[in-house]
Length: 274
Ligand code: C2E
Ligand code: CA
Ligand code: CA
Ligand code: CA
Image: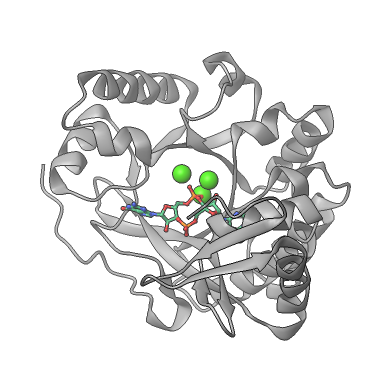
């Protein structure tokens, strides 16, 4: 069903409905969506292991399309990046999420994803500083998640990350293990935290190599003074292995799915053993 030919894009929705749209039409839709306020942010908690408390929430953008319903970011972020719409969209996410976080308990952090395109753009540091200023959120409560691609994108991107870290914002290396960056890159950048991609987490109970990789990552991170979050934790079995390996934080459906701001809960829903 994906072979719809060039210039078309297939949007799969919940249920079996399938919508085929011209790429250009979707691009126009995407541009208008920002003006029309069709984007919304869902928040998923990340848990501090040990105290087993909510450490903060990650902002995950969705598109509430008038005809197609809720569209997941995997479907429109790549197009937003190709077209540059990610720049104003990303700025909106930052401002909206910082404002939302102001109503949370003061200990709770906010994590926001940054696209490599946003980092390459000259004024990302201003955009971030502005979101903090408008909302009144303290820099120490903000975490910005970037992938290895962003780090490898060039000296300007790395410089921007250093300036962001200089503001007191935690820079987090996202999707760790999926890219090409060597472990030595880790020490060169001001990362506060590493997020282990959920692909490794899913394989933990059955693949001893995944367990070995996770153990190696947590050991290295500890040496470098970085925290380690395991993402995509769905079962208690995975959680027990991750705790034993020395992960400091965890996130995943086992604890909570992403929810609209009005529905988030500040307490861990499940007791954590092991
Ligand atoms: P990510 O940053 O790696 O975010 C984690 C993704 O895993 C989220 O998908 C989340 O809903 C999902 N997830 C969390 N726990 C579990 C679990 O236990 N099991 C499974 N199977 N999945 C889990 P989502 O919300 O669809 O976001 C997909 C990606 O879109 C994100 O991956 C991120 O790269 C990107 N994204 C989302 N929001 C933004 C944004 O505001 N800006 C940018 N640049 N990218 C964003
Ligand atoms: Ca992320
Ligand atoms: Ca991931
Ligand atoms: Ca990602």
